[in-house]
Amino acid sequence: MTGAARPRVTLKLATSLDGRIALGNGNSKWITGPQSRAEVHRMRAAHAAILTGIGTVLADDPRLTARPEGGCERQPDVIVMDSRARTPGGAAVFGASDRLVTLIPHRDLARAMSGYDTVMIEAGARIAASAISAGLVDRIEWFRAPVILGGDGIPVIAALGLEALDAAPIFTRTGVRERGADLQESYERIR
Ligand SMILES: NC(=O)c1ccc[n+]([C@@H]2O[C@H](COP(=O)([O-])OP(=O)(O)OC[C@H]3O[C@@H](n4cnc5c(N)ncnc54)[C@H](OP(=O)(O)O)[C@@H]3O)[C@@H](O)[C@H]2O)c1
Image (cartoon, rainbow, N blue to C red):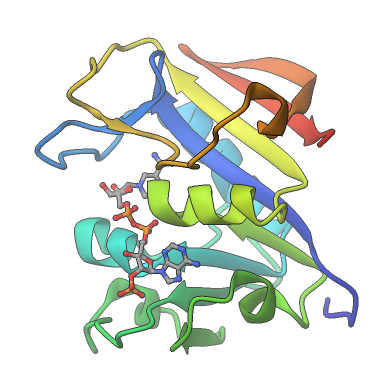
């Protein structure tokens, strides 16, 4: 499952209708429904590694295991972007013994993902923004739940610092599927 070239990178986003990932107070668990979450497990199983950020580990303490219906042959490795070594020793990502968890003491996303052929990013707004800014995101899988969290909620992508519209990253939509009450939109990067 590993290779020398740059990996194909999927950014998975799970948001409210208005593109928020959490309330202003940080509360964020289960915005999307069970069918979306089941699809995320299938997607995890199809990637060699899952990349997350220390912000997500500290806020949600996710396991990031692939638990698709019918089981999973191999658990994806986990890459935690944590330049200041704040990951607790008891974090849930360490709970699965049959996979590699790497804590990355720098902020270079491309370097952190090298050696893998497919990586799925499941992180907060800061890592998502860095990955998009660096042109590392090939595909977005966006799960959108029919709930509105409002402008005091946390936006799914942190500041990009764009000064002109023609510098904005552009994606083309390649699919839309219903996942229970949610929608899954798929996008491929154009620019
Ligand atoms: N709905 C979803 O799809 C979803 C998924 C995951 C998380 N979340 C939510 O996102 C929130 C956490 O977001 P977050 O932005 O604080 O956390 P994050 O994006 O998971 O992690 C951000 C941290 O990663 C570290 N980092 C290392 N390299 C980086 C780089 N190249 N670019 C940016 N950051 C880098 C930084 O900490 P250091 O400087 O200490 O290294 C930074 O503060 C939580 O509320 C969580 O529930 C939502």
